[in-house]
Length: 449
Ligand code: TRP
Ligand code: SF4
Image (cartoon, rainbow, N blue to C red; front, top):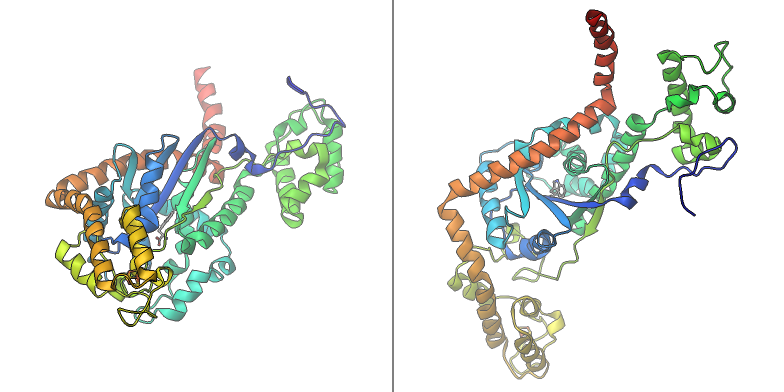
C-alpha cells in the first residue's frame, strides 16, 4: 500500500496514539544528571560515568549531562555553602573521567532557570498521591534522621527531575535517560506526569470539524457527547466560543473515560481530536553496572568510608586495598577461597587483564595464593587504571577557571535548547501568542487601511 489516503466519511481511520511520533524519531538525545555531593569515586565511574562516556562517543547520540545543584538543595537546603565548590569538583571529575565538552553539553542545572519554570508548570498537574508513593521518597523519610525532609521541595524532587528531562525533548527526537536502578521509579513517574500534562495542554478539537462538508461528522460528535445541535448551520464561520466549549466538553468526557477509550468511541471521528505531544515521553535506559562494592563489601558510598576516589593516591590505594574485605569464609591462608564471594575479585574483574583475573581465580580456589598477594596484584592494576584519570583531574584542578568556562559554555548551549522548549510549552499551556494575535492583528489591519 502506498500513496496518500484521503479520509472519507465512514472510513475507518486509526488514530495513532499520542506518543507515536517517538517511533519515527530521527534524532536521539541523551540526558542525565548527578547531584554535586563532592568528589567522585570509582563507584560513580562504573555506575554511571563509564556509560555516559560510551554514549557520548557514539555519534548517533546528542548528549546533555548536568550537575543537579537544585536537586542537591532539596535535601541540603539548610547549608548550601558547599554546593558551588562541589559542583566544580564534580565537573572536574566528569572531565577527568573522559566527558568531552566538544562532544557533550555539560552544564549546571541552576544556570538554566527554565528548569524551574517547567518544574512549576508540571507541578500543577502532578497529583500529590503520585509523589507520596515514590519508594525513594518514603525510604528517605523513614531513614534520614539528621535533616527534616518533610518539605515541599523534597516531595517535588521527581517533578523537578521530570522537568530536567523533558526540557531536552523535541518533536521528532527520542529522549533517552541513562540511570541506575534507584532512579528508575522517578523516570517512570516522569512519563506519567508527561502523559497527564500532554492531555491537558495537547488535547484539542481540530477546527475543520466545523468546516463545510463535515456537518455529518459534527452531528456524530455532538451525539456522542450528547449535545444538542445548535441552530447555526455548520459550514458557516463558527464562533471561537463554540469551538472552545465543544473542546472543553470533549476533554472532560475524554478525561472521564480515558483518552484511548474516547478515541475508540469516536471511531473515525477521532481524527478531529488530535492530542499533540507537547513533551516527548522519555525512555529510560537502565545502566547495567558491574558490581563494584566498597572495600568493606557493602555498597560503595562516601558515608561508609569504603571508597576509592578518582583522586586517590597510589599509597592510599595500596593501603586501602591491603585491608580490603575478601571471601569471609577464607579464614586461613591454607583455606581455599571463592572468588565469587570476594569484593577484591570484583575489582580484579574491572582493573586486571584477563591472565591476572584467571590467575587469581584459579589460585584462590586452590589456596595457591594468599589474599595479601592477590589484593596487591589487583591494587597495581587499579593504580595503572586510575593514573591517567587522576592526572587529568590534577590538570583541571590546577585550572578551575577552565572548568568554570566549560560549564558556562555548556550552560549557555543548554539554555538555548531550554528556551526553545519553553516557548513551545508556554504557548501550549497559555496560548498567549494566539491571544495576542487575536487582540493585536485586527487593529494592525485597521491601521494599515
Ligand atoms: N536524581 C538524580 C540523582 O540523584 C539526579 C538527577 C536529577 C537526574 N535530574 C535528573 C538524573 C534527570 C537523570 C535525569 O542522581
Ligand atoms: Fe579474594 Fe583473592 Fe583472597 Fe580469593 S585470594 S578471597 S579472590 S583476595
